[in-house]
Image (tube, rainbow, N blue to C red):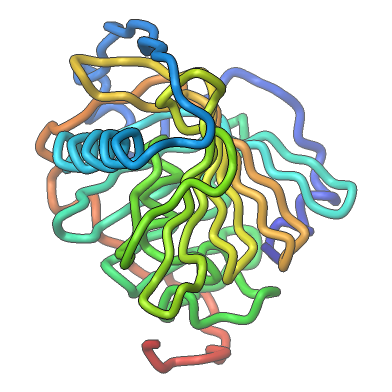
Amino acid sequence: FQLFEKLQKLNLKKQSPRGVSFLLLFASFFLQCCAPVSVQKSSRPFDPEKISDFISMSWDQERQVNALFSLGRLTIKRRGSEAELNTLAAGVKDSGKIKIEITHPWGRPLLYILVRERRFQILSFSEKRYYSGYLGSLEPSGVFPGTLEPDQIWTFIRGYPVIREHNRAVSLKENQITFLNTNGEYVQVINFYPQSRTPCSVLFPEQDIRLTFSDFKNEDGIFYARKVGLSDPRTGSDLTFDLKQVVFNKAIPEEIFQLEKPEGFETPLPQSTEER
C-alpha cells in the first residue's frame, strides 16, 4: 500500500468515470436481478447441526461461482489520507486468475494487478514501475496485494467468504464459527448477523486481516455482498469495495489475463522471490 501514499498529493475530484480497458467488452453481461437474502433463526452459540448447515451452504456457494466480472468503487484509507477510485475486476476461480484495474475517477489508470494462482504482477502508473512476486511473500509495507493470500483476494472481489482447509469447526460465541487446524490453532473466524446464516465478517488470526460483508443480494441463488471491507493493521490500510454491477459465470477471454510491462517502466528489486 505504499503506492497509495502518493494519492495524498493528488487532487482526486469526483467526475463521471470514463471507460477503461475491458469495460465495453462486458457491458452486455450486466444484469439487474437482485433479491434480498432470506433470514433464518439461529441458536446461540451454533449447535453442530447449524455449523454443518453453514459449511454446506458455503461449499454450495463456492461451487456456484467459477467466474465473475465486476465494476465498482474502491475507497482506500491510510494514515489520514483517503481516495475513491474506479475498479474493475475479473476472475476465474478454477485457474486462479484475477485481474484488477484501478483507475482515477476521470479514467486515468493507477494500478493494474494480475494474479495467477500464487504469482502476481502489478503495473503502477503513478510510479512507472512493474512489480512481480509471490502472494504473501512481501513485507507488510509491500505493494497490494502482495501481503494477501489468493483466497483472501477472491473473497474480496466475490463478496462471500471462502472456508479455508481445517480440521474441525466449533462455535465458541454467539453468531460465530471458529475453524481450527490439527494443532488446535485458529485458522479462520466467521461472524454472522444475528438470527441469520449471512456472514458479516471473517477474521484471519495469523495475519490479523479482517474482511466485512454487508448489503447482501441474491442473484439466481448466488449470495454476494455489494459492500466488502478489508482491514490490514500491518499496513494501516482500510479498503472498501462498493460493488455497482456484477456478472457471474460468463466466459472471460484469456487476453484479459495478460499484463505486459510498458516501455519506460522500472522493475525494482523484489523483497522476496521465493514461493512460500
